[in-house]
Length: 281
Length: 317
Image (tube, rainbow over all chains, first blue to last red; front, top):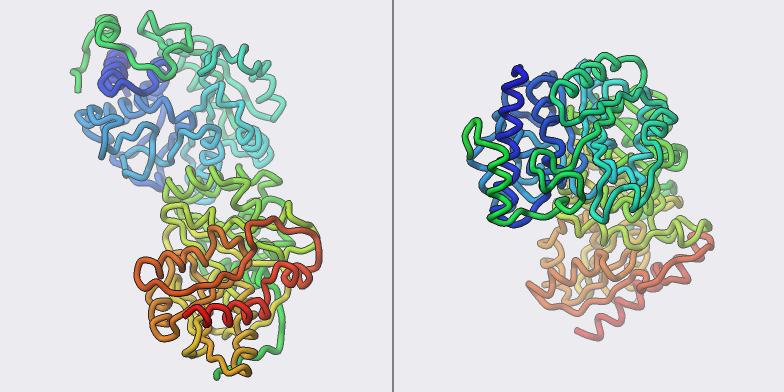
């Protein structure tokens, strides 16, 4: 468990990792990664109950599934920074022969990754299977998943959302990153989805709002509440309102940086806004 | 010539159901999933005996494939059940990313494959599934020939670590393989010894190949019939050994000739021992409604077609 200052320091360092990773290979997805940095840093350090090391079955520990695999930069950085693999390996992101593929995969056996993701809309189904396996194994630990809001336009999600409540999968906490942006523009412009909260509630989920999804204290409080709602016969959804590109001013509040890397000058500005705290890789 | 007879006909899907039921009794890690087709897949016995190890997904095949992938994380061995069309084409990307690329130990069990699904017509008669599945890196593709072999294959794949596509069908077909057989993934079975032509067949076409060999024998042609129950990995040695003796080959499958067993065999021959080959399969077409027997006749997936192709290929030697 880290204190709030430690979490903030780690968040800043992860932001630097993200910017440097995508800059080096001039590709990758910084916007959504930066928006979910506080969440994943907090989740892995203070919310999930994790064992030392990594084994695929993950019996006796909480599990996490990233469904919106394009935010691999933040995922990889957090996995490395909490000790699943050496932080130096972040320098191989998207390079030939790397375990850090453009989108996460188990294929290269990178510790911490339990499923490939990137083709959207599949992660909740996988998380459901893992949650049901936990129940069969008498394992009281939880399964967490993260999804983009635009990703909810994929129909498979709604199969999974319907199934989760019907089968009372109440050891699952699925978080939706509500940044309101997707590649072609705002979600309201591309395909308005109405109230995501009302939809999840109509499908029988318990819904927790985290209005300030880039505020570590708000995340801690919201996720503690989400945890307290598990085991009550219903799946739990967290609606995490975030700012895409958070922490790098020119990347914020726009879809422009969904899948674009900063140039040298932009990198320097971004790094200046996020001073080194724990040492660059 | 060795001849095969049968006293009973049964559907291969019932072989799957019996194999799954046996796994329910012998392997506590085996779980089953179905997308609202349990009677068609003959899953009733497993469900009755192991209600806590069965997952009724509803009509949501994409979700089923993802849940199956997730169940492996925690040590379960999931067997998914639905029609072949909904087991493959409908959910190709889910299988590709969440199962094959993720290396998950899921057994995709597909009934009602091919034309012999019958009257429901082309929307349900997939003739492309072998191709779709064999192209996925790491996927094992199995198409057993009768009830006994399907039961044995179902049991065997539980002990294999990795994704498997198991294809079987709806109609009753002769049971001519032993009830007590041990199924060996990737090991072809030579059914008859012959010197003039090799016939390699998979699934329902294996019995037709045996029938064809009897007709050929009466015409003075000695056919070597090989049951290729595993299309991937293919038993290349068995095929090459046989054609080195016969010098020509006919492949037979209830599948499009594009992307099926025949093309896999052709590749092996092209690389090792170019050999005249003829193909029995559907010729880049969809199916249609009809009885299974009518359809197999109309699309020339029967013993008569195999005889004709065998005679043709011998002339090309």
